[in-house]
Length: 497
Ligand code: NAD
Image (cartoon, rainbow, N blue to C red; front, side, top):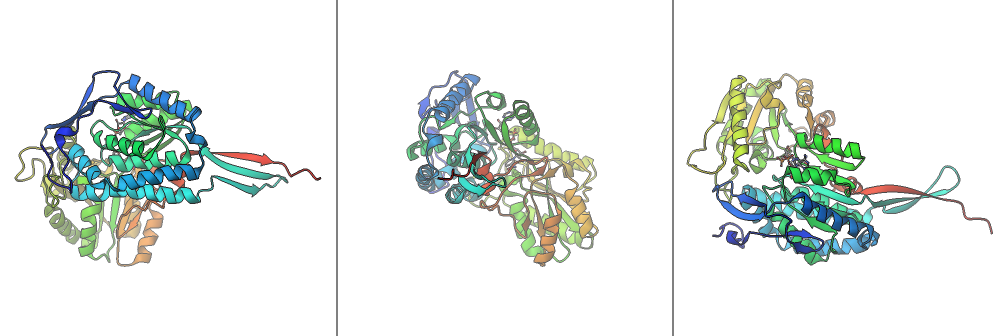
């Protein structure tokens, strides 16, 4: 059986694996437990891989610990590490199509999104981190105020546990593994059970690039095994992307053990359509930023804030846009909205659509039930609710599917108040023909990232959340610094001779 999209179709009967990547080798699992990777489109098993156990995590942490405490990696120069990562980058660039295709197969991301964000964007991160590492102040002297000089060093934080979610599995794994390696850390990565396949390709590429044994170890598994990894005494720092609920548990364990931790969590971002907005380009922009990855995106703009004076116009334009988006087979290049990752996610999103109706919101497009023409697969109908009050649960809780709420505002102050009336603070956008007015709104919304007439992350700049959207930042020099400890060495003045 093969998938037909992509330049070099991947044989899906060759996706099974029976090992983990530990200590630079393909290691047999400690138990016979298996993860069945199921296509969200066909509902058929497409691959079987070992399910990690605590014993596998123990072996991986032991290897990473040895590589950090005794191995050469943390003591290599930044230039030596950059050279290895540059080799990795070249190898990764040659496999972008395969990586995108694997991710579409395992978690159902539309191929149009996979070929943009699921592998090219991670590769761009690698290149950006390499450029940042070249200029990073690994060791710098500064004048002290007490007469001595001070050498300030950025040293590797130690053994890192990297835990990504399934929705953008490479995007969130590369954002941890690559800066960790550039900083001189060693890593144990635990991919999500829904999306383990891409991580095997990553392990192959890191191995081929010459990353030494034990420096990166990869064991896929579920949340129990993730919790074992987080609490493991051999781990110095946890880098996590996932739900706010899991982030709170992980943050609590790290707080108890005084482990470093960075948390990239959920969102409920607001797109503020200002009264002067040109609705044509605004709808084209929202088509992507509100519904990318079938709405399974932490930065999705799911609350659309419309001025009361143009409310009906915005609702109609949005209904037309969302209603016209092709839904179906994620392998079809024309598809814009694919299936949800799992049946439980399909059920969860559908239950929010029912909840919106119970809460009194007006359904203008979509609703419960399968999209027209589809009989199997974990699909939901792209849905727009109007007459939404920001206090409704559909406006406050992260749905993680293609469900949008249009909320009316009175004036710009009211729009900013509504945007900020959220537990989350990850992203936001403003849509306007007046860039200065847009910047003014951007400064007032309490989120870690913001876009004016667009939402495109830039890997040169920090990314992360205010409030319940997380702790710490990824990307930019700030994202690299998360994998370092700073040390100050006080250097007395040279004795007079
Ligand atoms: P999840 O929290 O259920 O799982 C994420 C990962 O953590 C998985 O690998 C899972 O196995 C593991 N895990 C879960 N509980 C754990 C625990 N207690 N200890 C250790 N590991 C644990 O999230 P998900 O459903 O896979 O992903 C969707 C969520 O991720 C959404 O909330 C989304 O907003 C968020 N997300 C955030 C960003 C960001 O950059 N802020 C990016 C992508 C996704």
